[in-house]
Image (tube, rainbow, N blue to C red; front, side):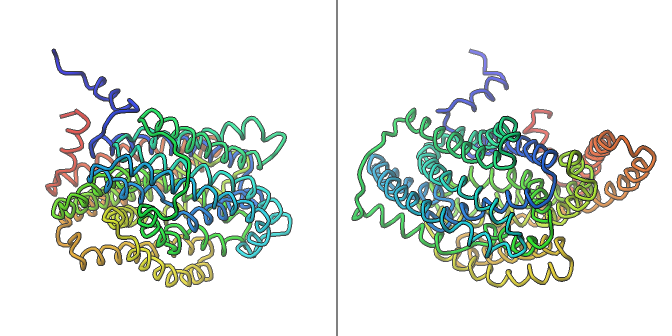
Length: 534
């Protein structure tokens, strides 16, 4: 029989039961991240157009913090990480059925705890909002507390979906995880479109909770049932698997990492300026699109394979795999950041401009976006380094280090806001995440898990040079052309932004590719081969 076509091979990846490799999982999750980011930006555009940047949107953004804090404190935030490691251990011992029993023991116990916590926190929502947002008015506190109560039950669905999703990831079935953020974003948009005339901005909170139920719980429950995972009643508090899970997860519960607390720190100070929380959150959303493709997609795709290598005692392969992943995401992160910084203004204008989101809102959002982009490669690297510890079942050390880093970083936010306002908060975020990435890398090196020497510094250096040359040149050229065009045709902002973004991206690709080829980088050739163009 003739070999299957490229389209046939691609469609095969979309089968729910398809068993993925590291490469195909990375492709699937990167594609999903891109699609969900596009839909998320459409969601952001809809919210910005309808509500602008002001007290209401600040309250909406802040309403997510208490539910997220409950999730992080009670279940460690990224529960699937520890479950993947635990389930892999049972699979390697040929005890897959017992591993699933542990999964449901934990699920049943924690859902009870989360339900009780949700009821309690509904009464504490207003005092919490008032304490963590000192710049909010009494009306903002009341609105934010109401939306917080709407969002709190969604964390139960998020936890249950993460647990069931871990059973699928261990089987190397990634389609369900790829679909989760897409359904979540679509639910918010749908609720906003259908309900905003009657409920206002509260409709978005209802959409988010619906998204947690559909995208996280219902989807993963259906996938787990298809994979043969059957629900089991009961709670056995003396089961050794429960103790193992608690041992790995407790550090994630009591340790507070800077990547999680960054919006909390920024929001505490930004609450004093109307719309600052919204503009910072919008800039972070723009930043999260490429960050998700690089760090989250690569990290989530690699984690089950890293965990398997560690469980099998293949330490060298583990170290090489982590170092290669970090080298790739750092190299690509440097390149992507240069384009993001150079074209920040047209990107922010296209995504958020119009409606109640004013030109000044766009300008400030573009500035914050460019500042966040400076640390893209650092966010990508630290995500993979953290997952390397988790894959090895080591959670206490990285979370202890991250908690210390967080305490050190908090004053930086205060200084940044005092010196440069909301822009200083973005710079403080960059400084904090740089410290986080460096400390995790050194800890892995000192424990002889992943050597710093094994990183591909030559390739990263070539990408840095290409990023500086292409980003600086294109940024200066199109900053001038964009300014001239806006002055000549102030009524055609969207068309100008689109033209500048399209031309700038094309020219940036040409310049970056030329520099990489002249310096001997293998990246262009590998990329062309992967795309089937060579």
